[in-house]
Length: 127
Ligand SMILES: [Zn+2]
Ligand SMILES: [Zn+2]
Image (tube, rainbow, N blue to C red; front, side, top):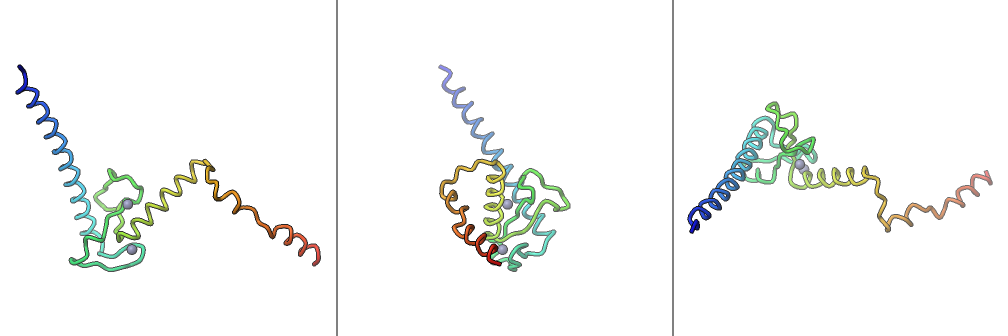
């Protein structure tokens, strides 16, 4: 019956998804290009230098971790190599984990105990 209209509808949905995906890719390409124009091609952490041959390994990092925050002056961008970019995000995730105050790590429970604490007190007494 209305098979053709149904097909039309799904095609439209796919088109919309494809369009937004393309839009995002274009936006990412744009801020990357802008950042590469603004900044020298050097990793902001390990100061590794890049040229056209290995430019793919130089990435644009968002300082506030908000990919929608792309001011034209580049104040939210930082050029980082893949490795430093990875580190930066790991550090950020760790920070937000510690910030949530959920001490559920069993492995660290024994590590905080200092077996030499008593010894330290004894040493101080002797002095
Ligand atoms: Zn680096
Ligand atoms: Zn990043």
